Amino acid sequence: MTSRPRLGVNIDHVATVRNARGGDVPDPVRAALLAEQAGADGITAHLREDRRHISDDDIERLMAALTVPLNFEMAATDEMQKIALRHKPHAVCIVPEKREERTTEGGLEVAREENRLAHYIAPLREAGCRVSIFIAADKRQIEAAHRIGAEVIELHTGAYCDAHSEGRFDDRDRELEALREMSVFANSLGLEVHAGHGLTYDTVQPVAAFPEVMELNIGHFLIGEAIFRGLTPAIHEMQRLIEEARA
Image 1 (spheres, rainbow, N blue to C red):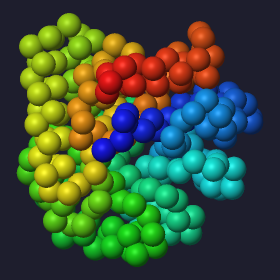
Image 2: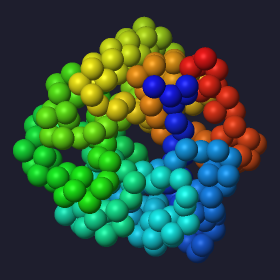
Image 3: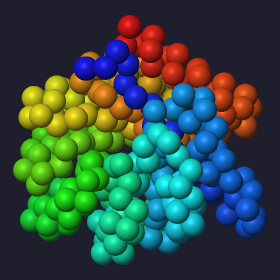
């Protein structure tokens, strides 16, 4: 296991700000390159069906510009599979997606769609993409992700983060314990464990301390914090907290 989890920086919401007015600024690819220069281990971008933030052109430019891995988040649709197979990013993370949601809500229901998802990810794996499944800290979903041939799971940390921000500390502690137990369980099956969604300076350390967690993907908070302190200092502070937690 690595001395600290890798940090993947999600640049979706730079594109959200750009799209609020139209035009070319702020450029999410510029943000990705700044994150790379700041020491980010990877870049995450979610190409949604409705293109509400990241665009097809953004993905084209990210693939051309980055020297760190791109984690391409996408729904399990035929359109997205074709795009992923054309670009062949380092990693593909399959996430649930609903048009009416503000952001990804909950994890993917793998157990209920096991056969479809097994066939869906097979061509992606054959193309050389590492396939990750974004799921809740639920044993049934982890077992299903393992059976369909995923190499990685990303545990949804949103419920834990929401409970913390709302002051529901008993719920927070229960959610954190579930994340801990399921990290251990997934690792025992040979799955690489990642985690993300809603993590902040206040919530990252307990998750980063899990020795099984190999990567944290964080976006919205870092982009928001960058408004006040700049993207590079925001990333450096997150890296410091992650390293401190693992140490």
